[in-house]
Amino acid sequence: MKRLVSDTLVIAERNLVRLPRAPDLLLAFTVQPIMFLLLFVYVFGGAIVTPGYSNYVDFLLPGIIVQNIAFGGFVTAVGLNEDLSKGLIDRFRSLPMSRPAVLAGRTLADVATNALSMTILLVTGLTIGFRFDAGLLEIAGGVVLLLLFGYAFSWVFAWLGLLVSSPESANSVGFIAVFPLTFISSAFVPVDSMPSALQWFAEANPFTVVVDAMRALWLGAPAGNSIWGAFVWTFVIMAIFAPLAVAVYRSAAGGK
Image: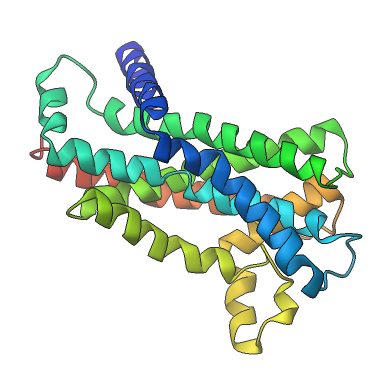
């Protein structure tokens, strides 16, 4: 266990250290979230009715953060695929290190980049008018939920990254798989504004559940079952995709 923890931290540090050397990846955690938030608030915000919210940024910010947190795992998908195609995974296997540390370190690094992205979005949101309507405990609970949800989706991206044939495919497949889920949800518009054929899907969508939970925790919106449901969805996603990613990793690394 001690070796697993230390090796995981080393792999996570390796993945974080390379980010400043890859400005295009760093932009995805800094400039892109701000761009999305400002575009939606100032381009689409005036046309979207959000009953119960004084301004659109209050309604939008939790949804934008959830979307961005979920996509934070794309670096894991691309990085794992690159390591596999370049033979680095085989080199790791030849070293006296814990085998699970490669995946654990990758996904742990995503927690740090997601925290950076969330902080940037919160600062931007507060600057343009977002305001919390909750106590410190609820705000902290929302932060924990976001980081856990992002960590769960890192395992989804790890699985996808190990399945596809190239880093470019890893990015594209992840985008295609997750992007529709974020838009057919309550992240950007109220679910009851959608056609009835989509409403049932949007209401069951884990993104809707997590976004509604964030609005309940940060803005005092009616919670219903969303808060405990969001944690359940998070752990279900993790319980499904972490073993799948490990199984594919073992197969791709020679089955040992």
